[in-house]
Image (tube, rainbow, N blue to C red; front, side, top):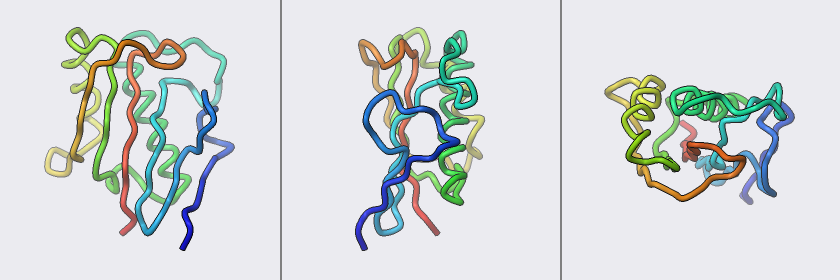
Length: 130
């Protein structure tokens, strides 16, 4: 079965040429999400790492929901922080609230010099259909 490429009208407006998600053989790969508001794509980004992390996670949940999935289907995340040393703890506090303590996905977090739209954080993930 060939991969399926998904771009959802309700999803965040892409900031580059990509699909929100690509699905193949039950695996769902979500593009890294920025802390933009799908309902107001031109609005300023939320202030601070906590608010931006929550918007990113909500955007990932929205895309998963469009696919009939939720964050419980996520098996791996990658996070990118522009101010790693400053924001790592606050990022973790917000991020972990989206997963039960006994079902946290595998994760890699890296510091980067910059992200699209001036974001402090971006997260991508891989989910698996049951």
